[in-house]
Image (cartoon, rainbow, N blue to C red; front, side):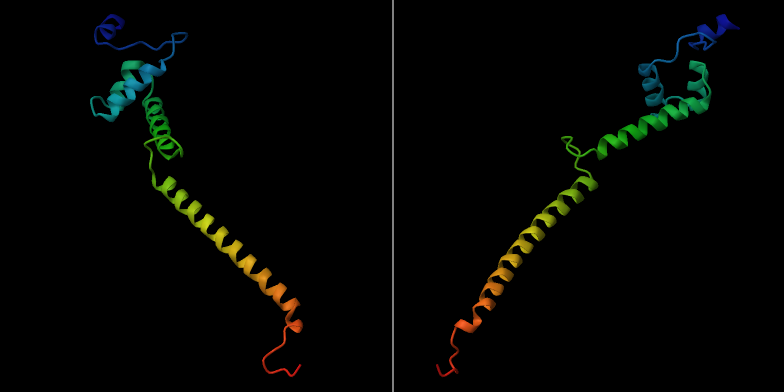
Length: 125
């Protein structure tokens, strides 16, 4: 049985045998995603259970998603990064508007301090 399995390209996964390398995991996941092999076939070939192949696939997809959502990485204009840029621009505009309003308020307050010193057109001084 073992000789037949080796001829078929199946790697035996017994206790103490080396683990499946990350490069092999990547090849398995890419083959599964491309539809070249089923998860069950890949699991048999590498001597693991289907759930392990499914975990490799899920980690691979999660890592790819996270990489696409990482801001600052060139070529990854995602909805999140566009939204963040829009919010940053809006924040800067609001800061500027607040600064202008603060200056205007201070001018009015200073003017109010001296309102009694300015004669009005209707006063008879």
